[in-house]
Length: 102
Image 1 (cartoon, rainbow, N blue to C red):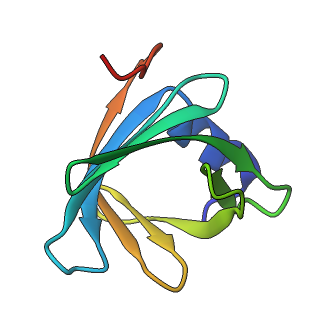
Image 2: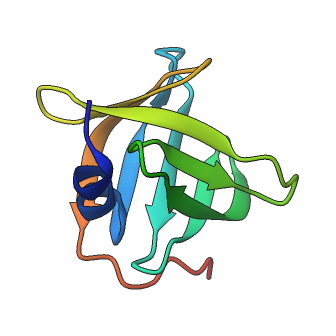
């Protein structure tokens, strides 16, 4: 399990690509250095915000307002964000400055 500093340095300024709960449903999350996010899954785009809690949980909040929090684990070549539905990240692109949907 990654701690707060590790989660922040891994997720802020990164684009994550992977699948939801090994279902084959692909998605991505782009996180700007200030925590603004663009989530894309099954052709639907949602703007949101990432906040990393003191205990290291990564909490994403979108228009509906309720944060969804994940415990972040390092895997062999990616990440697993664990919650009621696990997110498996297979590709991490770093150095992202802007995620704004074009």
